[in-house]
Length: 616
Image 1 (cartoon, rainbow, N blue to C red):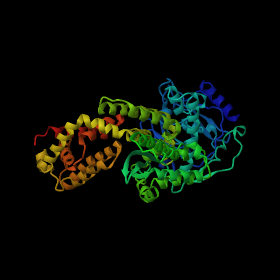
Image 2 (image 1 turned 180 degrees about the horizontal axis):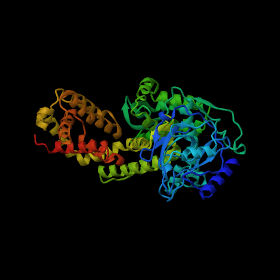
Image 3 (image 1 turned 60 degrees about the vertical axis):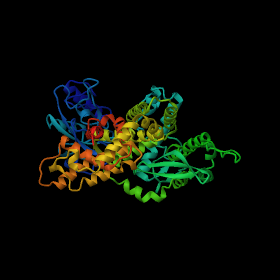
Image 4 (image 1 turned 30 degrees about the horizontal axis):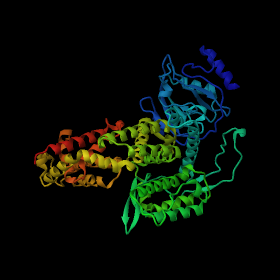
């Protein structure tokens, strides 16, 4: 009541109505939020401005730099809470499409105002006092803020309680009403489980109750089911790529990607081993016998045909992927952790845990891989898995005119699904990243999320289609591929100067470390990993040059770099070089075309063309 009266009095003095801006500030209805202390001094906190916006985790302190205007003020309204604090109430806009000053600087409704300038307010400042102190700082104001809490399931953005992702897929007619509602509920549950995994290292089935929910809206308490997640990997992408025939038996070749570590490997299993796994899982959780379809064993008197092997391979892949997704999409059960451990043992994970845990500590990729793990978990939900299955089945069955047509169609699938996921899952993915780094520039966060989603979507679409793509594309480029091999073989024995490298740029080590990095490109399956190897080799070249020419002040220009890169490319002896260039240039993320990545991809394309034009 006091805050409302003060709002009305201050508004009247300013000639405005309660709740509207006066001198850039106004006051709204009170709201109670549990306060938390800010652990850092104001000067140690990062500054968010309209030119450098920070994305901030809930409960994290930061500063916001605002500039007052005569027409808009600071672009923020404030209100008092029932426990005596002051929080941002609203962020008014003069025009609907143009954010106000505070909103453009990253301020959000619900943020608590802790101080102004270098001064922190006393524990419970009065509303009048806070407004007066902010006004006393003139036109340039730096607010000390603490990020407020968002409503549960921050990605809820569609009507009828649908999550934004479910709403998008319903609007695009990918899902009907019932399917969208199911996906929405599963997305909310997925967010909860991912947060538990990140913060507790366990999953609990009894956590559906929310302490901040109204008492009448809280479900009755349930007995907790606790699933420890220690030594479990959070995201494994699995495909059955093909079959071998060994000792009169069909052996299925599984491709496994540990998303968090970015490591891939292959395992070979007979049908009998799949069947033994299924028996073990059903003993742990009998409901799996009816919940997840397992391909039946063929009668012993029947011979296997190419078609029966293909059908069983596809069914075994669906079985493994469905069981693999249960930890985040299925009903939690006391044996859920044991089921996951059995499956991961079947996929040879335990023997690799130490190396996987080491790889995931790479500081350059930690945030991107965490967001990619979350993207994998979204795509593993039954609704998305069905969408991916339809995409793959359609592309496998379609009679493409050639490999380039198929590659363009794959790019369309990847671009479209990436855009939908970045828009529909932005809040969920942001929360995953902010749990690891509570303050991050908005542009950096956008780049991390886009790259993470792109890599996982590419993984899900490219891997099951790569054999058909390779066959079709090789038919088109076979003549160019053979010509490239001959030219590279002839150029490999030539000195550096023969490929256009000036005497003053010649490397005593013959660019050995760059060649080594590029030569490893064939050990990767995914185009994104091959592109990373290409970028690593390209970045290594200037470092080698600086180390071997310490007395030279100038840097390598584009014209200097190209002949060196051509030499490295020739010496790396990459198989299927034209195929690699075609795939990488086509599938390169459009958002990166104008970045360093785009520059090196264009250089790679130019280098391949230059080699093809050599007359040796």
